[in-house]
Image 1 (cartoon, rainbow, N blue to C red):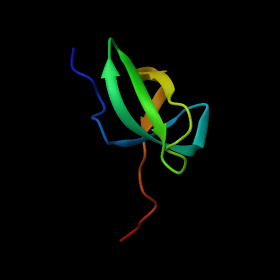
Image 2: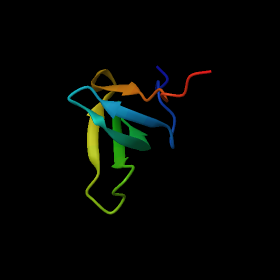
Image 3: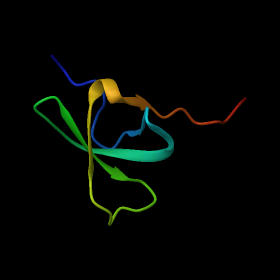
Amino acid sequence: MENKFKEGEIVYAKVNPGLKLIIRRYVDKIYYCKIQDEPDRKELVYFEREILPFLSDTKR
């Protein structure tokens, strides 16, 4: 099964939708994410079911 999110993609966790995350790596069905605004902080780890794609608020 292929992973849903690609490296470098911006997502957010369902438990904290205000925190933008960047997918850094996908290994054994686990996503390793960096916090977009604080890249020096520890990585966060999520299963695919725990994250959603970030959709920008731009309206045309």
